[in-house]
Image (cartoon, rainbow, N blue to C red):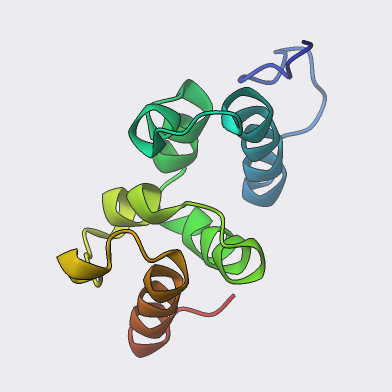
Length: 112
């Protein structure tokens, strides 16, 4: 299985935008973790951790992907924002988790 590099080669002429970097890292993460049943294991993947290190500028991209695809960005959103808008009893209900995060994001002025 071929994977994309986590880091862009140093001889690249122009800098990646946050969106480009997010897309590249998310592709790597999906390719290497979509078969995992453990979200804990998937969220510890180096590409996922690199997405977290992108910090607040990546939050709108995470929210858009969460809304459109229900991608499991819950741990990344929590790590970046410090928020935890999901009640523990909803922890396995992905649609409700998505709804809770999106409601929290709108309430806190995020746009995506």
